[in-house]
Structures are given as structure tokens and as C-alpha cells.
Length: 218
Image (cartoon, rainbow, N blue to C red):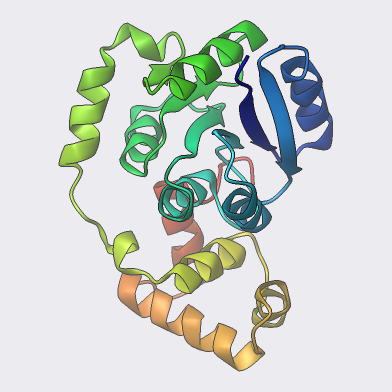
């Protein structure tokens, strides 16, 4: 039997351990890694090249949408299954546009996640109910037609700085987390703010919430 290799990324330790235990109970699954933040899961996926990345949408450091975009470039054979508490259409469309193959609501059963992993491993897209009540083709078509927005003009580093700034980190803390100088962090933040037309921290947080970089709970 050919095993499906899986990396699991969720910032909640209990959730991650519970899902991992259930996935490891499947004879054709092999969980090869776990991560608790967006930056580390990108590095791990690039190194391990798993068949499937099961990824929480709202990850600290780098959100699931941006992780998906990066993973599709550094490990194109890895297919992403997004785990999310949000059934809003914009999140689904953005996830598919960034390269995700599956989108599973956290309220779904483990059986639904297992089915999603097998479907996605076979090269098919999968959306959990009630999302699947709409034809997957409709979501994919909308994803293709989504116009380029200002977020896409940001560099990789500027996107990292945007998320960390929205999460409340100051320039010194951002510099430490990204292994850059404080001055470089300040420059990236200034460039990011200029590109997005943001003028202060309130604007930044509102933009991050609207874009889905930051969840309303945070």
C-alpha cells in the first residue's frame, strides 16, 4: 500500500495532537511532521515535501492563505487542505486562488477530513458540506477571475511584516522573529504601508481583518 505523507499545521497544541492521533489511525496515512506557526510550516514543507499539508487558516506569523501560496511554489507536488472555522465565500475563493485543493470547516467530522485528504491526494478538489452544496467549478471559476489586488504587490517579507504588525508586534520584535535588523523591519513596514495606502496602526489592523490576515477573534 502506498502511504499518503501528511504534515499537520495548527497553532493549538491540543487540536493538533488530537487530529494527528486520529489521522495516524488510518493505515494509508503517514503523519511526517507538525508545526504551530506559518513560518515554520513553510520551511518544514519545503524540506519534507509531503503529499498533503493539512493547514489551519489562521496561523500566527504567516496566515494559511500566504502559506498555501508559498507551498505551491516551493513544493508543487504538495496539495494543501485548509482547515477553517470560516465558511465565508471570500475565504474559500482566496484559498483556491492561492493553490489549495481542499477546504474543510472545523465543525466537520474527522471522517470528512479523512475523505478530503484521500480525494485531494487523488488530485481532486474537495469542499466540506455545506460548501460543497455549491459546485466546486463555481468556486474555481471565481478564483480564476479574482482581480489582482494591492496585497499581491507586497514582497514576501512585507507580507510577513504586515501579519506580525497586525498581531501587535513592534519593529524590534518583528526583527527578532524574522532574523533581520530593526532598521530593516522598519523599512519593510514603511514600504508595506505605502503600497497599501495605510497611514497608521488602526488602518493596518482594519486592512488585516478585511483581508483575512487577522481573524476577528484576534
